[in-house]
Image (cartoon, rainbow, N blue to C red; front, side):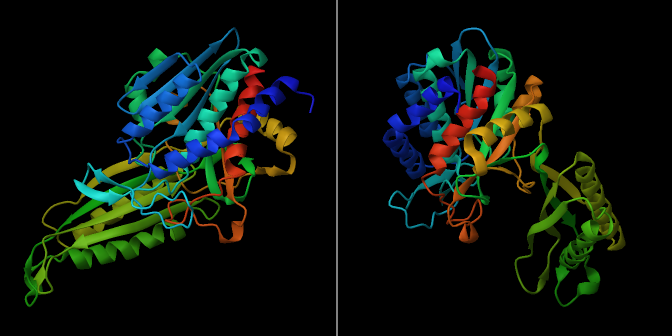
Length: 409
């Protein structure tokens, strides 16, 4: 295609395909929960050393950053997230993580674990790209930074690496690259877009305070269950009646816990909510509406004390830089042809942007199609979410190399 140096690097993928597939299967069969990715991080570091990478930073217990300094030129960073989910895999793959469990430190209980979001592909693709760039150092010039980030699933890993000094210890990148395997794209496709690509998200725990009583004497109570039901119903009007129709917004109530017995009206109830939005302004509007409605409903119910709100698992908006994204899209169009597509906004969320924002660096993030049978593909986080091994692994590895080449070649 007129890029002999880049083609030389991509040719390495043919040479080491068996190795990369075996490595992917290892990570798939050994998933680890957020902030507990100890064996995963150790194996990543072991592989990097085997490639000849000599500059490796361990940030926190499980964050790994590799730096390849290869003469004068731009600094390109690429991120792969490494954590898995508390999900029991349900697939017929011969390399399925059947029976994989881990003690969840937040609950103290043993839980099944699986890479039901595709992070095993992200790890292996970034390792494969790093290996190929190391083996063909004569083909490019500059610095390549491979960021293996823990705890994306709980929106804690990127912030942890910032707190551990990634901005002070590593050179400032000229661009920060990332990708995510998805079911919403055709198998083998790479898709990106300028602007908002993944939503801002927040989880909110709301505690309602009532007044307990015997079930036969409800007039002596302030019933938090009835109050919670009223709040849930009223919250459904926020998106339909307060958010402009041309904006995208979601409010979900995923959990409602109260009471222990049929004839006891409890003193408290706890709701867990989740919000999604594609602008910071709409996200703020959702949070204001939730607090306003909850507070006023509590006042109307005569609650003995105001409700409490706890925000957690907060993901920032992923908002692709225009210049960086157009450069990568042009490269994808040239090298992948019809497999380079426009990505529709994804209502899922990411903590990817936290690190480039801390550096003050432009970023671009793209999707990677994982299933040939897209019509029947399970969504991320499903127990059945195990993307096709190929061409997903080769395409994800190649996409990182082709994107980085826009700056390094």
